Image 1 (tube, rainbow, N blue to C red):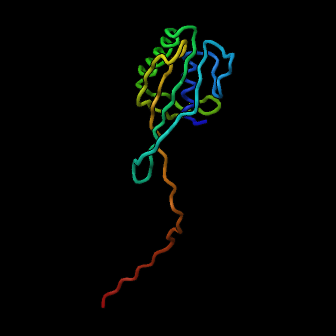
Image 2 (tube, rainbow, N blue to C red; image 1 turned 90 degrees about the vertical axis):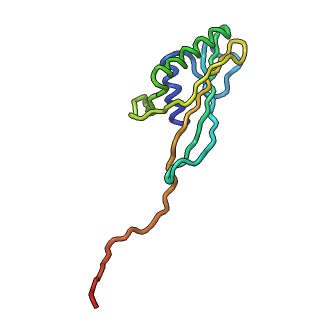
Image 3 (cartoon, rainbow, N blue to C red; image 1 turned 135 degrees about the vertical axis):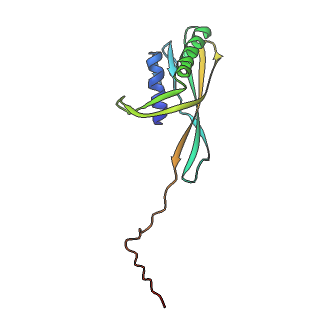
Length: 146
């Protein structure tokens, strides 16, 4: 799993501690609950040494009614907004890494009876692979006047 998605999942769970699904949602799923699918991404140029990937993640919230699902989605989205759209990154053991992911866009909407979605978009930068080379060890310069 993408470490950013894991951190978002942990952050959302802290705000709405319900059953979380990451695989296919079963027929008799718990209500209320959340579903975190894999995000989709597309790339772009960034700098001479990095490339950019923009991620989009649609987290589904299930509740007894559409209004309750949407109210929880709005509450979570507002909590993220109040923190300047910054979510701290965590290690697999739950400890903070000191880094963060900045959510570029967050929106909520009702998508079905008892289901709302929080749509998140963020950017991540990755370094290009560097060519291997043999470093220069010694340089001798002889200067003379003729």
